[in-house]
Length: 132
Image (cartoon, rainbow, N blue to C red; front, side, top):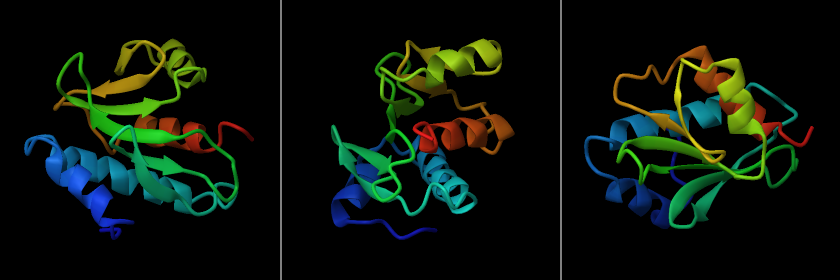
């Protein structure tokens, strides 16, 4: 597992509901693995934004921020992006029945969603390269 960038980030993960924590940690690892596969993304900065673990392309400026958290709508896992991007809308158009969405801001990830699915990695890559 990738070490946490700070005790504050680790505390944010520890504060997630126990049933959701393994999936959110798995998503975190997928974010780091996806970034490592694309040199244009460069290193990620892990920090807190709005109290949620956030992943930024601070060096390359290639992408928009990804945040991990719990959906207020479903109380399940969610992968958030900046609401003014077209990422969620484009993904919803491309994969209307594959995932659930919360407006323009999040992918909602119920317990039965396969977090290793290629669509998850594609969404993460698109977010981390959004400005390219």
